[in-house]
Image 1: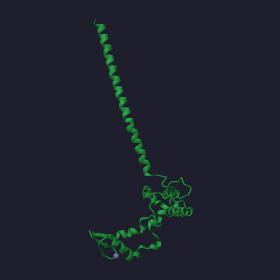
Image 2 (image 1 turned 180 degrees about the vertical axis):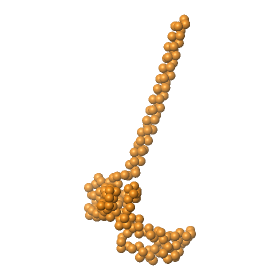
Image 3 (image 1 turned 120 degrees about the vertical axis):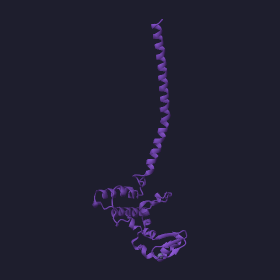
Image 4 (image 1 turned 90 degrees about the vertical axis):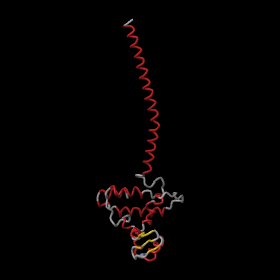
Length: 205
Ligand SMILES: [Zn+2]
């Protein structure tokens, strides 16, 4: 999470967003791609032709390692964290369900409390506040509130594009100005030449 790294904050393992709480991470670590058609299970050294068979093997043989009772799947948190919006899928146009929204908001706030304990210092409370504004505030049926109200990269890039277009429009104007200015100087010098010629003619008639 970039905003956490920026604060150099160490998330505790109590936080469900801590990398150790990603239950499939451990499984991925025990996946070995030995050869093109050889996938090995890191727990029992059994080998498989394809990755999907190894996944099935994890599911059937090593399901106990997944400790599902602690509900460590990050995908469960998607409702609270707007993954659907991040993944670029169309926003659902169904009617707002107040109960579901309240549940997601509660889950979101409990995530904030678990990850950034306010009593742990200024950076923790800053992150707590940021997390609430960024992810939790938009859980409302009132509308208008958009998630990620702070710091979306897209906004900045459109600003850059607008600036570039403005610059491109100003460049020709700038060059025509310079062209006209230089032409003006030339005329000016020609005028001066004529004047000096007239003066010289008068001096030497
Ligand atoms: Zn195995």
